[in-house]
Structure formats: structure tokens, C-alpha cells
Amino acid sequence: MRLDIRLHFEFGARLPAQALKDIPILLEEANQGILKKGCPKGKEEEASEVKEWRVEGANLFLRILSGRYVRAHHAVKRIRNFLSENMGKKYKTGIRKVFIDRFEIQYELDREPEKEITLPFVQKIEIRSNTAYLELENLPEDLLESGIDRLLDLLEDKIKRQSYGGKAEHWEILWESPQREPIWTGDPTQEMIKRGWVVRYLPGIWYHSFTSSKIMRTIEQICLEELLSPIGFQEVIIPKVTPFNIWLKTGHMPGSAPSIFYISQPKSWDPEFWEDLSDHVKITGEIPMKLLAEKIKEPLGGACYAQCPPLYSIFERQLLDEDDMPLKFFDRSGPSYRYEAGGLHGIERDTEFHRIELVWFGSKEQALQIKDQIMEKYKHIFNEIMELEWRTAWVTPWYMAQTGEKGVEEAKEKGTIDFEGWLPWRGNRKESEWLEFQNLTVAGTKFSDAFKFKIRPGKEVWTGCSGIGLERWMSVFLSQKGLDPKNWPESFRGYLSSLPKEPKTLKL
Ligand code: SER
Ligand code: ZN
Image (cartoon, rainbow, N blue to C red; front, side):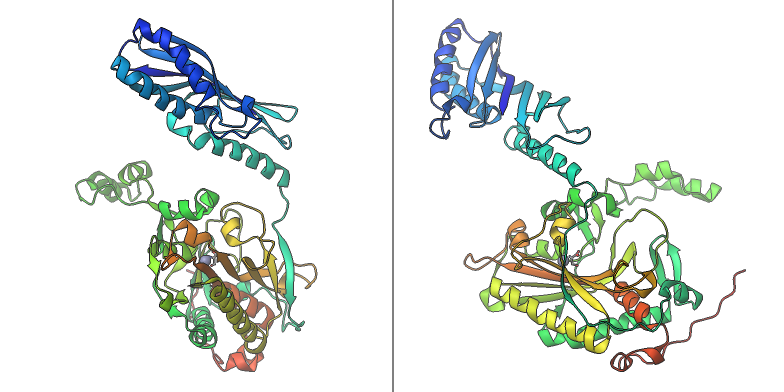
């Protein structure tokens, strides 16, 4: 690594002649002293050094070079403070502003990129035999502290991602249920549309009529009676509008940026402000979209993407009481949204979907014990009540997948388990793609760290969450068991054995 910064400090007034005598002495002192501080022994020539200086009026121009230790961009602040202390009083003028005129970076890479790389703030990137040459000009000073280090991380990260390319996310089977012969091999969505159970409303968004709503509410009831009540989960209503500051902490921003539904508020509530738009609609019957865009604010965030993040924000900077641990919440108060491009899908893949999310907080032992309890209840529901053919897999944790990372937790204490069901209409059980219909995650202290909550006086909190996809449970169930309750497992029929009558309609 070689870092080369040309910058200038602007003083409040012209520097006197004496300064020209003092500056080289001061710079030498800094080179030997503060610019070596913290550098490992024997690596001193890698530390920052001021190599050139010149004065023009009120400006002091410097060139700082460094290798890996006491990096040049970290040296700027040290030099600034040092010169302020030693020159300020003497010349009765201080440093007013710092200008980073030019920053050249030579950075060794593990591997070469496969295609062109772009980076913010960088005017030019050249890569020759595993070394990247970056040129940055007129850089904002506040990027020096940590922005440049992040920029280099981003460079490596982008190259790494290119070489993963289309490689699949991590997937490792954990457990498989016994095989079960399906009742039929039809696609339930097509049949549900025919029977009027669901109506396609917008891409990926459905109207659920009496029957389909009833099935999803039955699934909820099974969850309540067989899982949530016995383990002691209590209902909360988690807000569904999620502001950006929450997603910055969880990493959904920028990780999930392409699939968020963004939400904007009006710039003003005053009807006069809206009058021209209103007049236009009255005359033309159309909405003037450009004008509308002028009348709304920048998005404040987006619609619920995952239910748990706003809950973590509620506990931000809170000390929890040990006596209340473990805490067990569930939320079923509204839909989640994920924008998906591309063609028509059935109800198994929706843009607007409904989930129950379970969230739990506690010590590590408590969090893991709750996970075991939940797993046992899920097994009971899928094996004994719904009689599904399903399996579990160890996957990239959602808190990584949704931030755009591809790794996996190696030690299986933390991480995500996906639950997948066979959809016979997609093909045979070996080769077809199974549907992920829910997940379960122990996130360790990932979120209690991000939102800074602890158990009094300062013990760590482990969190876990599990998202139950109602449309997806229904989809797996109907795909395997068909749409006729007389073919459904007896124990499920105990909850729902006859279906409502749908209204008949004819197209005009
Ligand atoms: N928050 C988790 C997810 O989004 C569980 O629902 O997958
Ligand atoms: Zn969650």
C-alpha cells in the first residue's frame, strides 16, 4: 500500500517570514514523533511522512506519503492539530480549512476484478497486475477519518462479489421429513383463481376472498394454539413504516435497496398547495405525475420488509431487566412488501405477503432454548397436523442475505434455518425447487449491538426471530393436499373441515 496526499491548510492570515523558518523544524519533529506514533516496531518507514511543503500567502501546502501504518489520511488530522498547537499562538492565526487537493492510492489486491469497477469519490481507477491505482481529487475532509478505509474495503468487496458472480447462496440440508404421497400434482394458484378464492390485483399482490382468507386464518389459529400460547409468546403491534435510520443499522440499506417499497409524505397538507394538481385531475381525469412528484417529500423510508427491525429500534439504548427475560413477542399486524421484478408468479411468491413474526430476547442460553422449543412445535405442526413433506436447511442468515452478503455462520449456534416444502406441481421431489415457507434465526448479539440494548447492569442480549409465511404455508399445504377438505389430514380438518361459498361472477 502506498498513499500519497497533497493538501493545503488555509490559515486565517498570511503566514509571516518567521514561519518559513519554523515550519521545516516543526515538520521534522512531527515526522519523527506524532506521525510514527502507534506504528509497529520495525515498520517505521511505512508510517506517514511529510515529504514536501511550501507556503503561498495564507496557505501551507503539504505532501504526505505513507505505507500501511499511520496511513496518510489519518496523518492529516494529527498534523493539523500539531501545527495548530505550535503555530496558532505564535502567529496569532489558526488553520481555518483543510483542502485535500489530490489523493493517490496504490493498493494491493488479492485478485484482479473480472470487469470494470466504479467507486464513489474516485476519479480514476486503474488495475495492473494485482495493484489498484486510485486517483481522488478535491476530497471532502470528513472522508479521511474512516471513509477512505471503507472505500478500500468496498473495492475488495466488489471484486470478491464479481467472482462469486452467480454462485448460489449457501444451502446445506439439515433434516428431512418422511416422504408423503401427494393428493394431486396441480398448481393451486390456477385452481384457486378458477374457484374465486383469489384474484390477481397487481403484480405479486392478491385479493384473498372468503376461502383463502379462512385457510390463512386457520394457519394462524394453529400457530396460536400449538406454538405461540404454549411457549408464552405475547402479541405486539409493530409499526409497518420503516424509516431509513433503522435500515441503516440493520444493513437493509443499502443491501435491500432494489426491493424496497419506498414511502413519501406530502410536502404540505394545505389544500391550496394541492390545488393545481386537483384542478388538473378534475379536467383531464388523469394524474399529472410530474407535478405530483414535486408535491411529495423525499422518501422517509419504506414499507415493512422484515417485521423485527422496528421492534429492535423500540429497545434502542434500553437496559432490560433480568427478571423480564426472556421476552417473547409476536406480530401479525400487517403485510410485508418486497418488490420483485419479472413475470407472473402464483401465490407462493408475492410482493405483498402476510407473516407472523416471532421475536425473542434473552441470554444466549435462553435464546437457544427457545429456538429448540419452537423447532419442536413446528415439527409437531408439520408432521402431525398438516402432514407435510418438508425439510430444513442451513442457509445464509437473513441478516446477511438482506444486507447483500453471501456467507454462512459456521458454528451452528447463530444463523438461519429455512423450512422448505415440496411443491409436487413443480416436479419430482429430487429435482424440483422446493418452496421456502418460513425461517428461524438466532442472530446472537447482532441486533442488540446495532441498537445498543443490554440486560442490566451490562449483560449481552441474544435475539432470535422466525417468520411464518401464511401464503407460503397455504401454498405448500394445498400443493400437497389439494383443494378439497375431504382429502385433508384429519387433524387439520379438526381446525377447518368445510369451506365458505364464494360469490359467482361473470365478466362483463
Ligand atoms: N426477519 C426475518 C426475515 O425477514 C424473519 O421473518 O426473514
Ligand atoms: Zn426477523
